[in-house]
Image 1: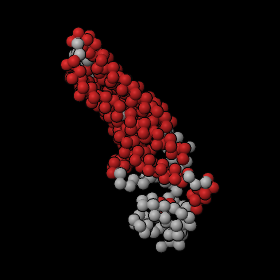
Image 2 (image 1 turned 90 degrees about the horizontal axis):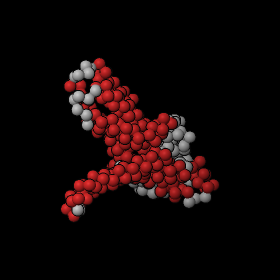
Image 3 (image 1 turned 135 degrees about the horizontal axis):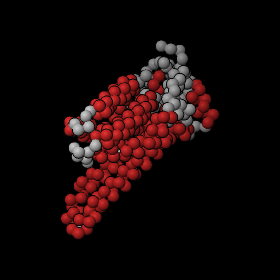
Image 4 (image 1 turned 90 degrees about the vertical axis):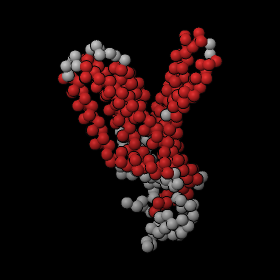
Length: 320
């Protein structure tokens, strides 16, 4: 048992028991959680309150960005048959497609705007106090690609849908160009998702998950993504390169190549749609923990700046 003891009031991260006077390497007498989990200086609650508020807003925006279009699609799927029964047949024949597509387009535009706003607030820059001490996550490329993510989704989907709308007589060179465009869009989105999930993993390690099962599951999944991000991206890039080589050297009249192009377009559509949804899903799972740490940071912010600074400085160094 260490002789190093907490000299000031500090509530347990799990049960709020006052740990003042207890050894830093022992357990909480109330819940048994290691005291080191509370006095770790890397916890988000000890980060800059303004930066932490920005992170909370980013998680809220990213998690909401996927809900808007999917809730709109679900509402249309449920309500559209009933609306057809009450609408004038002439109006349906002339304006039915526009009436159905307009809410979806608006919903996807709102979702894209929310996603961009969330990416704008996400801490990619290593100058933020939110990042783990001694580790750099500076990656402006991921932020720039994040800004372009909605447009990459549109471009990739447009290329795939163009291929699916063509017949066997279509010039193969055009199909190659659109498949290449869809692959480039997908690889850029993959890079953006893997980088964002890696940062989310490091942030999740700096908070208390508590009873939030989704956050713990996200931590395990993002740990795998974090450790395997390089091989995952390399495998996807190799697969895309092989497909493109087959297309480039195939005979222009080969019907089988066009069929493979159709199959590849369908798979790419699913992959492109899933990439931004992955970020939104991780943000939804991380949001409870971030909010918990933000509430703890707000409690600390109620102290005077001198008291709060003295409290943080009095904490022992973070455990390795």
